[in-house]
Image: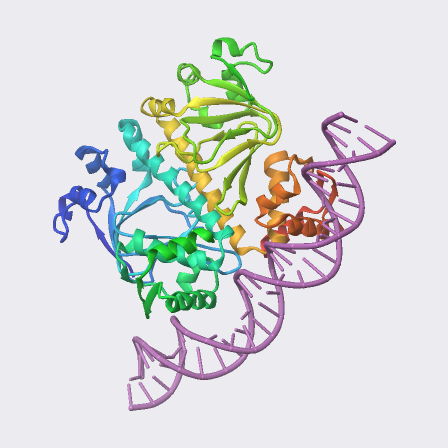
Length: 243
Length: 243
DNA sequence: ATCGTATCATGACAAATATCATATAACGCT
DNA sequence: AGCGTTATATGATATTTGTCATGATACGAT
């Protein structure tokens, strides 16, 4: 089971990478940057730090949760489990990501699941605390709204990409997303199966494999198992653009 | 061109359907319901009421705008213009709908276009005013966040529906959406072309026409030009569910 | 080491969907 | 009323994508 480390800021200094305040700056939780030290103290007062093993479920779609998740380390997939049994991976969460479920201020039922792709250390914060901070701190509310707006735009973009582009364009999108948004490296070892890469690209694993192979033949990427290297980003961008 | 009626609350009493305060309650702008009279006065101080003719563009994707739109009457389509020239209609806005562009608190660039499907009367409110109200009114901020969360869930759902369902399921979704969300009537005259209905359903107009015809043959709907009657909602729900 | 299971890869085929061509109907305009 | 334009409808065909079957490879457990 997931390992729970209850920790207020007083004892989180014992953890190897510092206390909550430094975590917020170091891990770039921009969402919390408008907060004063006192407000941060309040926010993290009864937070829980939890370590999930690879494959463990951090949040389960359709269950109730009143927490938001702050990822301190590791990678997790955020996906919708559709009625037909197929998953749609919406995005990958990484260090510094802040995840509010579909229930924030709206029920509390999660509209997606989160599963650890690597060991994930994250903090769970009671979402009621966020509400309280709004009245005190105007720019925090604006920050959260900005975060929401960005999420909206991201989803809008994904909707168009997934419905309007052909498969090669979608595979190119997935590869560029991993390179630029997740790993910030041309070479990366993705802790994702072909099935999962396909679920990110809205196609079957067979189709993903075939197109990845084409990209390999065209020297756009180098592939060795889970290690992928982007060799020709411009061509991938062109493929992404042309659909 | 669109007709502009500049109006503070002082003179909007002259309009046939009352002043801003009554508009907020009557047209169910729930988003504003937490506001005091004074806050409403502040909000609408320099708002503009504009009347758009059918086909006119209310907002254009990729342009800058610092306003939010409140629809007082009429219907408008909210759509993304994709690179390949095809449109994706994301939703239909109706009386009482509050529309924040993709730029709210985040740039100010619109991530979608809005076009009037019927004559539309709407009010444009400076989004900077919303920010100011956050500090005064906590539950207004929470309301806006709730609205955003709902939008997010709506998009997430649309993403899954459009990528996982077969065409009949998507047509059923579009028809049920119009019946239940927009017209609240089993019989409705949709001011939408087959092309637009197809853009709502993520398919070509030919495919939409064919499937609508099948539904007609199966006595699920009655169709006469733009007038559609939902005859068997349960069957449509089943088709929607099974993909 | 070896067995069983997962993943990955690849071909043949089937299904879903788009494209193209063309016909018909509706509708504003002179 | 007649004409051009646009929307709708429908068939034939092409393309895209998924499904199924089958090997090959990797990998953990006994």
